[in-house]
Length: 306
Image 1 (cartoon, helix red, strand yellow):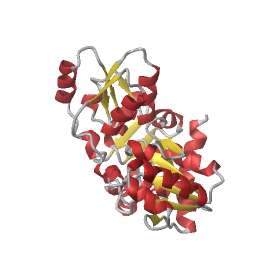
Image 2 (cartoon, rainbow, N blue to C red):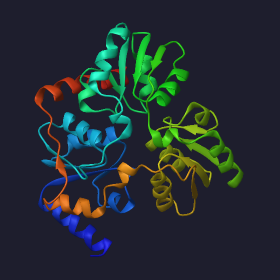
Image 3 (cartoon, one colour):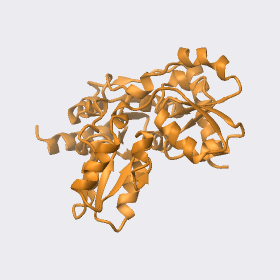
């Protein structure tokens, strides 16, 4: 079958089987084309709450599908590829943080949304990359333990100088692998281009950027800017999607190493198999895990609107 034929069949089957397809921005373009909603992980989970569909298919990684299930426990939530995990989410578990809690008993535990459902159950508040600074600023407690991404945590700490923010060693290995020399080389190759990076990059890379923001914020910056050339410091697919959207502009990857292998596991055929009931995996979370994990998400919503 040709790509277009598979896409047409997916569109037919998702309607026939009452399935809403969510696709994270790091997915391949042919998957984004057949999705009902695209964007960042938390925004997709919020979208899933409002749709009438009884089944939701998350084209992304496991923690995203878990977050979707936490927010929509009454829906059947599928992950498109069962082996699509997240190195950052998997590097810290509930047991580790429980062991550390006595050492940080006076600290508010702030968890990046890129964490497992189990870990969220023992955290105080959740954040996204776009909301982290505002939420941490709005927390009454001065003492913050920020997990798991020390690079995003360092960025938040720089923006919240009145807070005492403790970090653990963890983060996205893809973004963390970018170094300042990559920025210098990219600027030499593409003179005058603005460098847009994700705060999961290391502080010395963030310091050299013209703009720092979440995936959606990076895309919005490029959309709204009068500039026509940009160096994109996040997963390679973002430069590709922007190129499709704005063929008269140029988008250059900051580094060839910015490839999330877990995101690339999902193919269009995987999505096709899911909508015809032949693939994927249903996300199953017990009621207590859902209730406990949702507390830190609810607190994020509360603090984000203060």
